[in-house]
Length: 234
Image 1 (cartoon, rainbow, N blue to C red):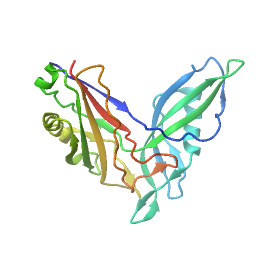
Image 2: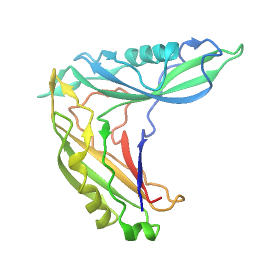
Image 3: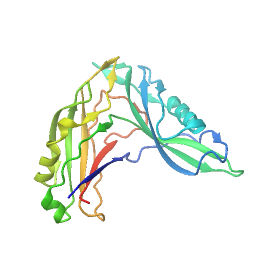
Image 4: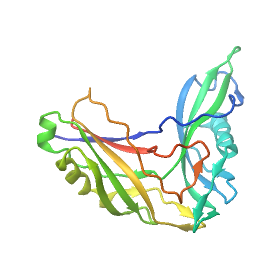
């Protein structure tokens, strides 16, 4: 049995705001929805500066970066006071085909949160894989200033074997480093892990605990999970 792992970005029903954005010349994009991400710095007043965008190129990337920069954010807090911070933002670019072959470009579902960058996948328990048994583990993590996991606790699990498999590898995980007030900081995060033994089985809706120290988009919904780790048995 040779398990495979992949990431799934989960953004729960965030509120979209504003009308469709700039018109983009036809022939340079295709209609639909595209997920992008970029490092983002949010100052104490909630103003944002967006780094290099991943997931889009050229003029489309510039339009997306501009809309991410112009969005409204709540700043991070330290000792109850707003401070500058650096994290990672993901968002959906929605392209709507207009008459004449142009597209309206709109950035939606912005999520500012820690991102898991390196994850050694847990081994799928052999007996569970043979039975096609699916299940999940929800972890509460403390991530150090360098992105390493310094504490991992199972807060919910459908199977003790799944929990054991996940806890065996968390020390090798690395998160995107984050900073508040120009200093990297330790923070809490929730990470769901879904073991999919049968393709027809669907993961539940996971709820992730919110760390009030983190910055966020003004429409970002508390409880949304940016990342979930999915392990398949085939």
